[in-house]
Length: 205
Image (cartoon, rainbow, N blue to C red; front, side, top):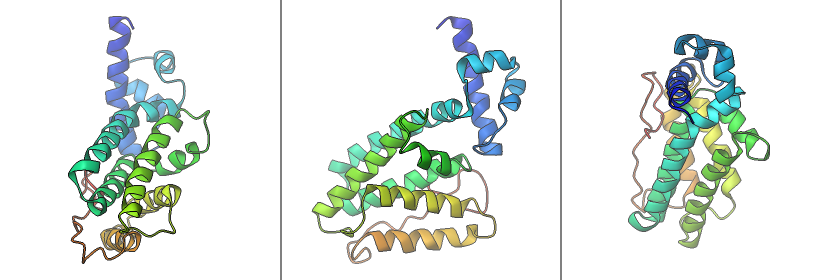
């Protein structure tokens, strides 16, 4: 990529992060181009669709989350590793309001620009869950897709002003339901914390 093209790409990505954080997953690409000071044609050369922009924004976060999940396989108990993945995944899907829906759809759509990030996130959770299953500390009747669905549900709760005050409590309820004997096993009860300055408290990445 030429230096001027790389400069435009980096500028569009930085501005895109701001706009998507403000407007959510349905953010206006026209607003991104305008704020970045480039034409729509330049934006579309780098990000031909809104999904392509979302994928670029999510990729780094998903890669970091996947690496953290791998590290926890040796540095954390199965319980803590699983709940940490759940907490961090909710933070990721909450950071960009409304992204949980396209991520969920992308899980079964190999043609989606979001598919690779979505599958990586799903697989990291599945591995954490399987480790917890092997240790006998997680419910045997849930799988990785169930866990992914819980992430989407929790992210949705944190995004609802009328329900945001209940979201922390419901995160605790769900994490307790996923594990067997959570309190007796000493699992961290750290609650989600906001990255967007709202009254909701999503997990911090």
